[in-house]
Image (cartoon, rainbow, N blue to C red; front, side, top):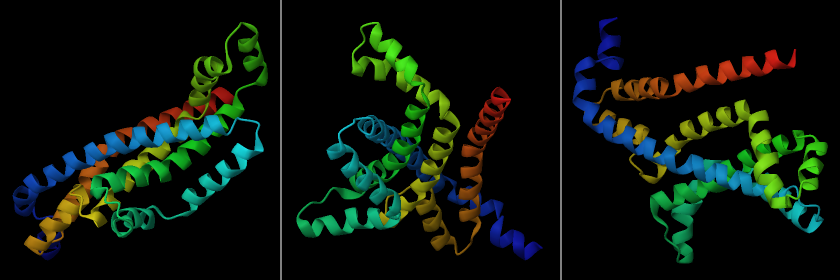
Length: 224
């Protein structure tokens, strides 16, 4: 038991590695603050475009969404970071993460929001248009607010996955929490920094998980 504690739960190593882990946590929070709004913005664009009747818009859009949902985000990130420089385009680690998450998570947010838009009764859209609102105003003031409310648990769940997915930024040497924990592990030859990073992720995301559960239970109760 003592050997286990020394190898995985060494408090002294946690204290020594905490400044490095703290820097990684700040980078993870900055990453999340960047990629989540980017993904939501991309999702709104895709969801709104999916409502257009033209097949010349909807079919290419379907191919776009399916492509970036099927493509592993890690592969996409490596291609953007290591592949684009061969084409003379170097967007750096932060740029690669921003573009990669915009493409990947935007596709998932787009599908969630599209389902939310389709859940809004057609009669409400027609009623809004009859009051003189334009298509854009109807979408912005009537459809999207209801769509977001209808799929809010799914949006929060996807956001949780996006925050956890920021850990793949470590493959492009972006110093987020997991990258810094691995750096500390390589110096201390001890797994405690990795365990500490896992605990930090849990503390960070557990309140959101509880909020998600409450929203899901409330939604289920409203359907009964």
